[in-house]
Image (cartoon, rainbow, N blue to C red; front, side, top):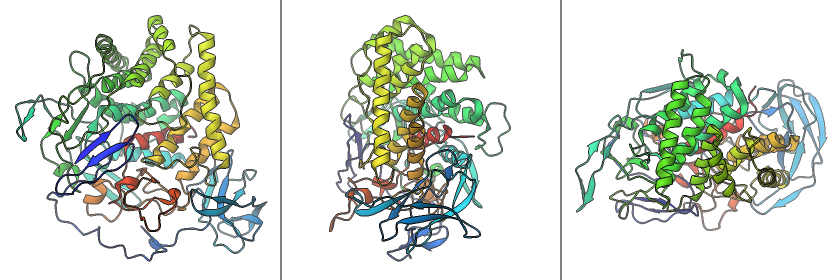
Length: 603
């Protein structure tokens, strides 16, 4: 199977001969996997017993709600909006969940026709209701909404569970977590990572030596580890600590942890340590570790095939420089020696980039025997800019500042991913506390950030389900939606305005149930959460429940597995199926984006 992600964020996937030929458009890691031997266990892939109008959940077969609310809950001080099927009703009421007495009455908005979701809806805006409690939303003629909470810390536990999802992705060690009465376990895995320097010829590999790059997080539903995406994903945890302060020290997601370092930083360090192992003596970084073919649906300890490093990549090197520079700032207060180690790695990587100004791609010929080539980059301009920006902010070097200001982007997209790291570079330039910046260039950077944020606000206000990115539906759109929160938070830092925080909160609302499906997109959270993620531990452990805290990719109008006769509206192309990796795979860069968004509201 071939996995190729190009600069225009399209992925071409070629399955192995056992799977046939398949082409997919998408923007992040994905894989259908292959059949390999697995330990015996119950068949959890049996036909869905639910009716067509029902969905499968831990509660059995349940009919999705008509009224779409954030089922995890709403923040007291932020806008609170629900999406309601259009009807003859013009009013709604918020009812106490226990007594069913009305505590707030309001008028429904004018109905709108929504071409992207193929429905007609009204909005129930109860932002003025600010009393903590548990409620349901009532509209005459419709079933009441699922219960939802309102409080100032309603998302605190959601952040813990989202971080628990990352902990569950740990590679190289035994993991055991408990959630909602279920215990999830995988044993130590991939401790043999990996063979370095082998040559592929004549259909096989020869030579090479073992090089330690164990640890880190499994990237997605597969067990590969990729420097590009791991660096990008980790940046969101580190920037959350930098942007929102030490309050995140009270997020307790690591089971039975008793150490002095905050669990948030422990999790970050676990991935940073692995990335440092990807760096060679000359400062360059190896692009990825992976098998030649993805394994089947087995727990990671049963994935024992040989794994190899690819070659180096300048994009991977620049991404490592950037995140190591951020780590140096973040760890300075708690572990100065580790901060020095990260800074040295960043400076070594930058020296390599300065000495090698041409793009270096990780594959010398074809894909060097790999049947997948995730996160391949054949250009690195954005990555080099991000590296310079973070290293400048860390060191204050005026020579680096000059280079950063020569490369500032004039505008930002409202949707960005691992291949668009210019945004992160511009954010860090604007957020830095440095009087040395050119005032005109700084003003232009502010305008680029605010311009993108204002577009996100407009999208949030005009879309029926509060999506800041509007009718953009492609691979990993849930992650893109969560990631938009960083632009909104940075904009609010530069020019404080409640509209930015309200828009950021509504992206979370969408992921937590205010979407056309009325379901939470994070396993183990809220009402009818995603239940069948494309995630090997969830598929291969024999437990009829998914590992918790994983944000699935979400609606993707390019889903080749979606029904074609008749075609679905693009905003409805999400299916809770572990076979549909187009929409239901998981990935660390989606989880950390959600963690950042929730961290901004953590109390």
